Length: 284
View 1 (cartoon, rainbow, N blue to C red):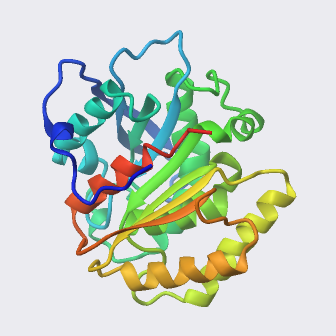
View 2: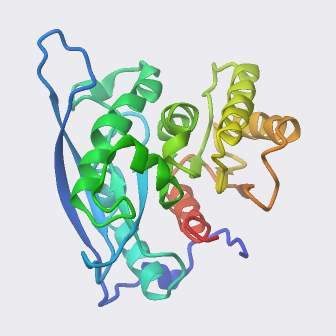
C-alpha cells in the first residue's frame, strides 16, 4: 500500500451508499463498586452499507483519547463516517463493523487523570463489551461468545485507539487480551511521557513470545504517529527497540510504523491513521 500524508479529498465527499451508526447499550459487571450492581455502558456502532445478517463481518474496536468518551470518532467527528462510507464504496477496505466504546466508567470519570483506566479496561473488553457486540451483530463468532470461540475467531477482530486509547491498545488489548485480537493500531503513543520504556519493550516482546508459543500469530501491528506529535519520540523509541529484540515482529510483513511528516496530536492525523489501518486490517 502506498501511504499518503493528507486525506484524499474524495474520501470527504458524501456518498449515497451510507452505512449506519447506532447505539449499543450493555452492562459491565467487571468493576467492583461495593454494591454488586453493574455499570451501564454505551458504545456507538458503525455498520457498513448493505450490512446483512446473512453475512459475517470483521470487527474493529476503536477507542477515543483522554477526557472524551464513546462519542468521539463517529458523533463528534461525523466526517469519520463519511470516510468509512467512501472506503467501503471504493472497496479500499474489507467491510467491517466498527465499535467505539469508552474506557471510562461514566461522564464524571472522564475527568480523572488516572492512567490505570488503560489497563483496567481489559476485563470489561473481554467479559462484557465483546460478548455484547458479537452476540448481537453478525460476526465471524456467529453469536457464540464463549471464550473458546472468541479465541478461535481472533483473526477477525482488531483493536485501535488514539492517544490514551493508543496506550489502552497496548495495555488492555495487546498485553492482556492477545488471544482475542490479531490486528492492532496504536495511534499516538505507548506509555505516555512518564512511562518506563524498558518495561514496555519487555511486555511487547513477552506478549509475542507467549502468544506464538500458544500458536497465536500476530497478523499486524500498525503503529502510527506524526513526527511533531507529543507522543512520537517515546512511541518510536519503544517500537524501534521491540522490532530489534523480538523475532516475531517483521517490518513490512506484520509490522509497520507510519509517520506523518509534520503531523501533530490531532484528529486530522488520527483519521489518516485509521484510513491506512483499514487498508491493512483483515487482509491476508
